[in-house]
Image 1: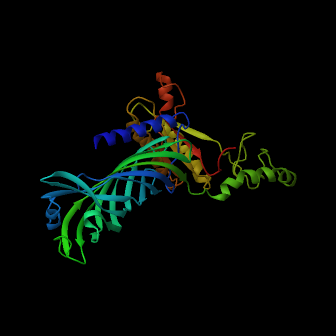
Image 2 (image 1 turned 30 degrees about the vertical axis):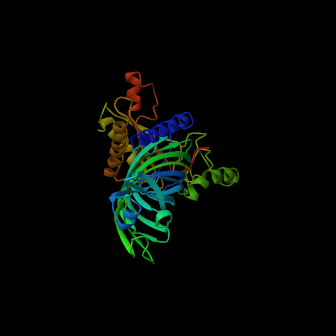
Image 3 (image 1 turned 45 degrees about the vertical axis):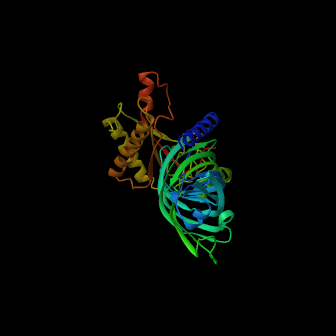
Length: 408
């Protein structure tokens, strides 16, 4: 078992190394879908039932036996919906075919006979916590529940002519995995999953076969598989509203005829009578109300702190006042840190910094939801982290508009 875990971890590391030069970061957000398709190896507990005895086995010259469910590889896939940037709900689908064997031990020694096979449908619903949803390598942990169906169970060999019955199973499941992004949509995935899976098994016969009688209860078969998966994935994001994306090109197309029909003092293509920002700097990209789209505001923080300084609060007071005047503006507060400390701690610190800015703006009358808090940890430095001045620059929150659509 330990060697398979090590192999799975080695494969994950190899995938990460391959993807490292290709993507600086990825963007997983609330409302995104993550689809994964590939193969999974299912390795049941060994043996699954130990020391079973029956009249049939006595006729075979065996005093006891182990029942073994063999491992199998199968095509597998998952679909995950992001309930938030970090939390997703995932459904696993697979359809492996397992061979069932009897390992018998008697006076003549041991032997192994193939006695049956069954198809397995093990849908598993999990809740996954993603640790780095905005970074190119995104590890996650998940817990969930599994409901397994056994389909088309067959017997052969010593049990040929009997009917094998396997009861459905309900059990808990846990997993660890990692998504490694090549770009903002395509990624590879490796995961290892444990499923608590037991089933009640019995054999029935239309005739008295070799002393078996008309039925035999095998008891509880403990399958409890480890499942190792390798998948190719695609992130499908919810579509952005059409209006903000179309605003910039519409304004550009309309700029020439509007300029001839109305007064446009700052030359931004928006008539003065509807221009909410009449002194836009020349050349700025603007929205339909004439306000600059690419304005950013930064606040800075002391080391290992998410407390706003008096200077930052004064800056945010002006931002809040302006946002109340420009009620159509929406955006993000993106938190960042320097590279001192562990990456997971810095990720959480960046989120606290962003939330501190959002909370302060809310306390000054900016409606909840207009500014969204996001943290990027140490992944997006502006300056050199090897100097104190550079680290101070990187300890920041940047407020930027998101309602104008992407920059050209």
